Amino acid sequence: MWGALLRRGGRGPGCLRGLASGGPPWSQVVSEAEKIVGYPTSFMSLRCLLSDELSNIAMQVRKLVGTKHPLLDTARSFVYDSRNNLQMRGLVVLLISKAAGPSTADISFQHNMVSGIYSSQRSLAEITELIHTAFLVHRGIVNIGELKSCDGPLKDMQFGNKMAVLSGDFLLANACTSLAQLQNTKVVELISSAIGDLVQGIYYENSKSSEENCLTDDICISTWKEQAFLSHSALLAKSCQAAMELAKHSAEIQDMAFQYGKHMSMSHKAQGKGNIMDYKKLQGAIKAGKGVTSAIDLCRFHGNRALAALERFPPSEARAALANIVYAVTRFP
Picture (cartoon, helix red, strand yellow):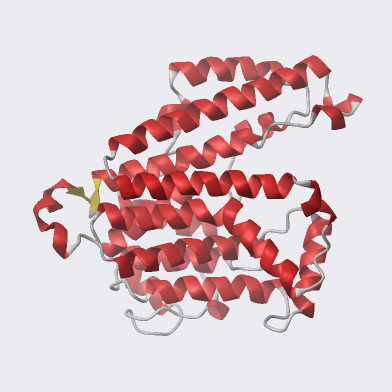
């Protein structure tokens, strides 16, 4: 299977093709990848989401029906995922864990592997999804001072904010508890720093200075890339690195995993348009820069960096799946 997918670009099974040749659609990429790691991961945080505590919160959130509180949209996204919004971070962690395989320094623990993945790496993948989900829920907090009458009654919107804080904190607490159970100091440090990056990135996104800054030069592009890394890429990059640490891989392999997670997610963020005005500013600034001429070039630049990182891993169906994820997120209509 993986050989056929790689050969779609006309190159041998040991090589990764360029981005220009395209790739399979997103739904096919995810379906094939989930088969490789052993079970579906799109609802990896479902066990926690169906817990008694969060189920009670979900019942309370039903009171928001009829309002425009963003927590409702967040809840719907857990069930109705669109083209590139599947909960893919845990899936990537599992794929890169399988692509790297066991470390030669960890031969005695290979009996703990299932489908080529350590149980601790599967736990890490779930932790990554829980953290991502927690921050999605926290992003559903609205500014009460900016509400309009059509958004819904004030008391309901205030209630929605309380639910967003409570449920997000619950998910994050569960993730931190599971993280401690891994009993690996470096992994705890990596994921804790990723949480800090997320907080800092969200702060930048919501700061008034960020809204007022115009993207008109290369310095501002660098600022945008820094903010995109903090809010969008740090968690995946550091989770991929942590997965290598759990398998006792070398610092070089850990760095390659980090680079894949960083650049794959950055290429995804460069593709997403988000707010149309921000996108137009970004596109204009990119065109004025010396290194790239369009948002498509920026997207493909990061995609190619992700593929380059994968070259350090041995050819396998897991590596092919990771490459196909890059091809999928760098596709343009």
